[in-house]
Length: 193
Length: 281
Image (tube, rainbow over all chains, first blue to last red; front, side):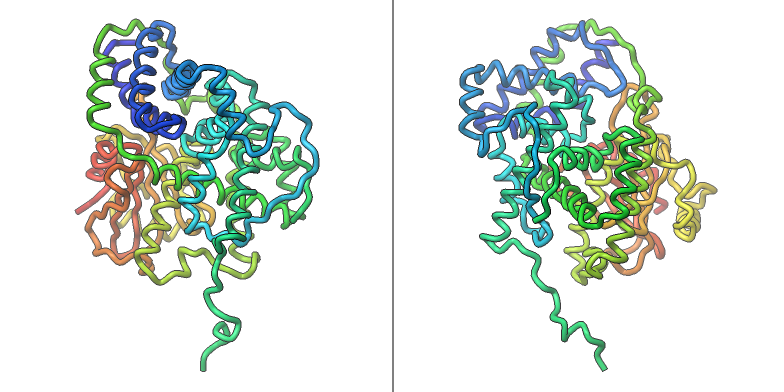
């Protein structure tokens, strides 16, 4: 691949790399460093890059994830995961039978801020796969490549991330009135004469 | 609250993401037909994903220009010795899940129909509200979400315009003065990949998907078309920008007498170029 082509492809992905770094970084001021470090690593590893069928984005995301792991350090990261986790979960634990929180009454037009907050509170490993899937649109096998884990782990983490978000939203909907308001009463629905 | 095995819910999540194997998808699809309560959970999962994506995108600031400059200088530092096994991301190699994707599309369409027709008697919020501003926001969010989701599965789009929307196709031909019911965006670097019908909340809308002509490019572009029924309040033959200036998915829109067009891209530059090719005024 031509040098300029590599540069063009890499820079095309800059907004996506910045977006993921922004939402995975612990502090705002660290984002720029993470992004720059990602591109420095990418440049060093450019000889190993092969433009495959899903472009450069997953490759850059994988580098970003490694940079984040290095940046925060393994111990600190694990501590952060433990602090962040609302419920301790094991990736490969045996799922059981659980209550499905109903989101039927959630008013989806009013949840942005609270939902964003709930996403921020997800453990980092769950948040990463959730953002890669829901926001960046990566497929499971691409996510598996990014996080260096089997597709089954991706499925498990996505499931748990959504589970935690659903529980949080259902709770918020009950506590803070994020419910669909009745647009019209039954009487108003009757034909007017 | 319903009680469902976690394993099954995990499968349901994968199904909603179009990631199940064809046989599993078919089996689940049959199951869903007989279990509306599970279908409701599936729908909530889709709404959650939609809302989460919107919340994150809205909360993301624009890329700082200083950071762009710094990264540009980093990338320009040394030659990249890159090996290439270039193949386009929509190549046959990517389409191992074609059948699953088709099933998902069928299911999404069916789910949309089902809920439009039977679930608690409600219609789409897009059709209910009379506030044009709310309509614009809802439509914008919906087209961005579908663009992001469906661009991953270009193979599920048919080369033919959705048969059930054929009157719309005629209106588009009239607008564009073309034989095909879709704009030609080759001068903007895109080729038509196919069309597909959308499910709720974009019922009666066709999704026209475009992929880059250059195989080294990844970003796709979408045009959504729906019959103009007064759902938007802008003047005809005028382009309006529905997205925020720093949005990762710019949304430009315009309408004719009979059709509303929404163009969704992954960057403003390519969206503007495509708009120039897609508009007739």
